[in-house]
Length: 98
Image (cartoon, rainbow, N blue to C red; front, side, top):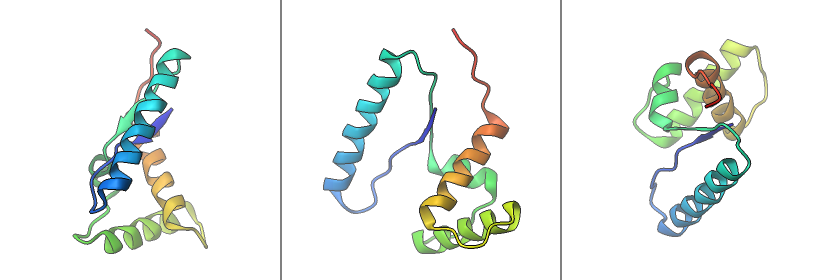
């Protein structure tokens, strides 16, 4: 299982909720012996060549990356992020059971 690491944007309430959710997911994965990795957004974006200083620009570039590399037409920002995260994971992660 892969999940994207959280980062503070500008809303402390949302950040707190995401941090709690991430903690619950980690606990669930460990309790159920599910291999997982938390990937920082900057890591997968760098691998995929996503450029841009502003969040909006990065989101649009991620959509373009997904459309161009996977022959997709209409996708949302969230779908594009998931594709980029997944592309990083299949090309860089090696899960081995302990």
